[in-house]
Length: 211
Image (cartoon, rainbow, N blue to C red; front, top):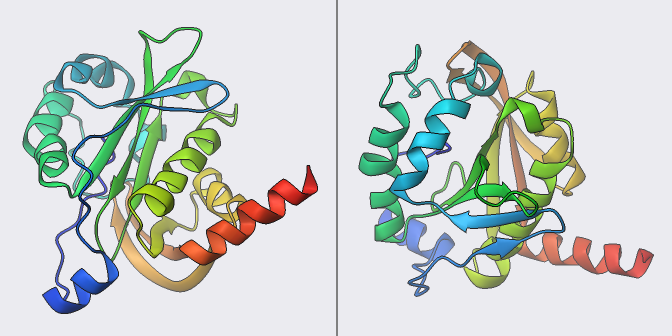
């Protein structure tokens, strides 16, 4: 549940060139040193409903997120938005779980086909500040470029959202534009971060050479 999906207004020919259809029918389970990323299911909504509705989590998410958050918000979003997008091949969604407690969902991360935003995530407050979302972002970005074969990853982030911006900066992304976007907490200047497949792979090669 990232609430990052957007409607596309691009010309179909341009869209198909930049974001070709993937033939991958299944979403795999991914792992990092500390995390299991399990494909999202409707049954995950009950845990998400407990963790997600916190101001610190939603304040910099798109204004499409209802606030105050309804009691069935996670269930209806998964049922009506996320899982249909996954079934169409327009989104790839995972829940985050610690390897030492795999039954507990602690957050979620998604990749989204589109020209405006391609990745979104949230993490339960108890697990903030531990570098867990950086781990998750690394492995799903690898999946975006190496498995799905997209040429570009683009993510808008409110300038005030320093923790999320730091993840993009540490991943070698760069700012290509500044716009005003509407969020749950209001309208804020927003940086558009990008990285190409070539830049991502060059970064990976550089990191390996340092080891």
